[in-house]
Length: 208
Image (cartoon, rainbow, N blue to C red; front, top):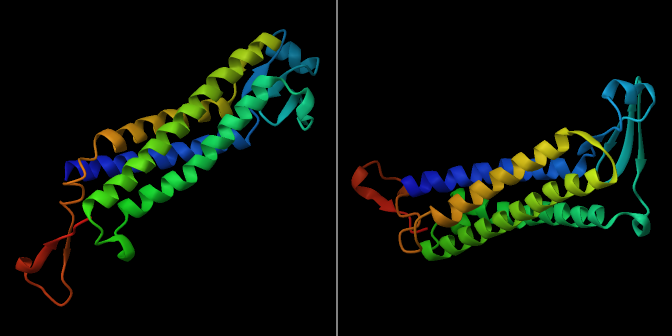
């Protein structure tokens, strides 16, 4: 029972973390840049917001973004962080799918042996950990390299979302890989009742 609860907790953390990584990938408020104080930069229209896909200017009553579409002149760290965050977002799709069909008692896989579900769960957990590592590298690398180009005043909500999402995925993936039991006993504490029977003696162990 404990292993099942840990597996479910790891799945929930991983799913929430993956959503955070996707949000961080799609938004541009990664770092706020300014060479002076924020008030001065607003007056001079020099308060900027830098992300993976656009450079934005935040002034009084104005929010204008310039898309970063010319790949040939983009800094290498921007392209690398783009690739890492896209890879993290894509890895989440098969990982969540594997974990979802393991967690939910779906009819096609309800009577699978424990070893099969265990292997699928471990694969999903490993993909979640890879997802988290891509997110961690990108969300640390980007602000460090951006600070070398210009002065960073603060981190944006996109970067915080990426950090939190990556941390949740790393935690959830480690829980799934390390704390979900073993191949022989995986899912042995799940039970189902035979249809048409109301007696507890007919309860059977679901070999998942």
